[in-house]
Length: 158
Ligand SMILES: Nc1ccn([C@@H]2O[C@H](COP(=O)(O)O)[C@@H](O)[C@H]2O)c(=O)n1
Ligand SMILES: C[C@@]1(CO)OP(=O)(O)OP(=O)(O)OC[C@H]1O
Image 1 (cartoon, rainbow, N blue to C red):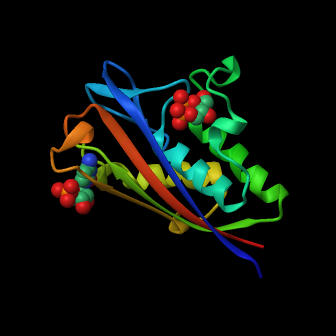
Image 2: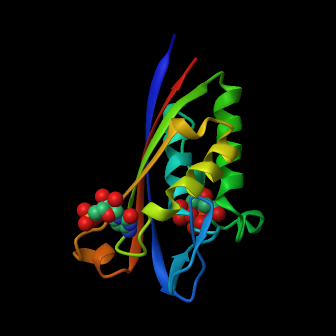
């Protein structure tokens, strides 16, 4: 059996009045993430972890942020596409572990729904997805609520 690990990171600016989508869940917050797609940093970090594990470059290589096809797209669709790419190389997903870093809102109440959305998009068990959150203790751009960050690792095997 071949086992591979992948790591992903993403960051997006937070702007007043923008929708805030994380893990496919629309959060009720005065600020939201700004990007070419729906700017879902959690989905993007998982995409990069999957692609990295299978040595398939990165999200921007496959989905250019100048391509009109991806403007405003739900990143869950991009996540499903990344799963297809690694499946075509013969890999199955073992598990995903992710970390969100943002000052507000509180993420814990939304974790079950995020896990469900991501499990559906990836076609894996909800129990094989872990989502955690931390603040940046008011420091730096995260502490000033200027941006949101996500990290993810995943294990794939064939
Ligand atoms: N946006 C966030 C940030 C944190 N949490 C939860 O609160 C716990 C304590 O966070 P600290 O940054 O103060 O260590 C953290 O372990 C998470 O459970 C959250 O839900 N949403
Ligand atoms: C998702 C893509 C494509 O729409 O764009 P963004 O939403 O701007 O996100 P980013 O993480 O900056 O780049 C990856 C791109 O593939």
